[in-house]
Length: 116
Length: 111
Image (cartoon, rainbow over the protein chains, first blue to last red):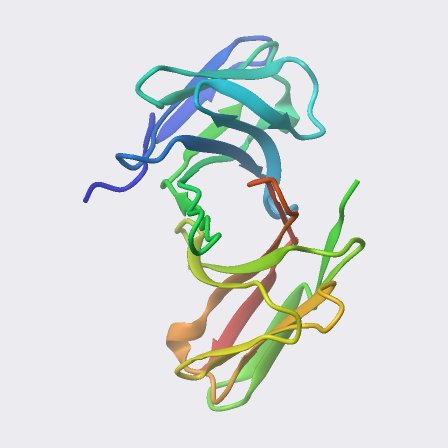
């Protein structure tokens, strides 16, 4: 079974540009989560999509946005890039299990975004 | 909003010593999950605890969920170099799949 995939692996942008990051969840998973992992700050929750809809967003400005497509893949867009947006962006997918109430998140390898 | 605090931030041990990381939530949790992130890797799910006072073991790892479901701990007995990495706890609230992650405890093991 293929895991969560993300592209690109690395992305270098200049301040003010826009970045688009992509994520494909594990087959059958309907929920996709985006996290920002900046040095020393742990995992900061960005966005949660489920069944094509945004269910929740973290404490990030509106220039962080995204969407989920009918095939459950997802895209994260970051507009007007700032230097402090440099980080590892992780995508995770999960499938809610009503029986076990288990919804472990499976993480992708991440996209390393560098803003210069 | 919900906050999850994790301590210590860093822990350095000699191989064979024990290690414990603690997680505290500002609100009652429906469940708590633990993840491990190896250097250069991505977080990998270890376990989920749901019941008050629950204790689960995975070989040398022991996970506990507090009676009030607001705190948790991960204990590693006789650490090995393969245990190095950052351990994250993540708290979940009922009716939502959103997890709030702690900042993690980075463990280094001196052989």
